Image (cartoon, rainbow, N blue to C red; front, side, top):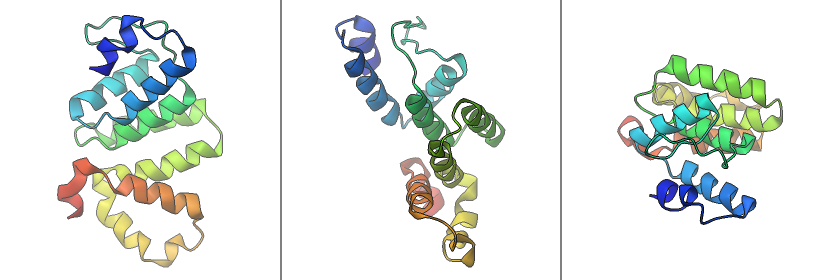
Length: 151
């Protein structure tokens, strides 16, 4: 596993490389167990290895938090209430337009929103959407975990 084999081994000393590897690790979290781990990291504000040891030398950036929230919203087992709480916390941490893009992704990524959003894509409700709203909504809508909800 990347987390235990690379990040917590201390083999990488360059901060930029550590941040890049963490970003790839977060993006690759597709299984429910991995996504639940990201939820814990998001709530705690720290990365932990598989033994539960806190990795103090790894910092979670705002960009990482956005990735975590996107992965959390793609979960089939995390409740909508929890997802909304995480998104609200992200909004408190980041007031930039990056938050808006993440919100479009998240609303589309929740499996319970698929039918409603699909209908919205073909209505006049989206006439005022910009390019990023479409890009992020389409990315959120297209979740591998949700194939049974979109087929």
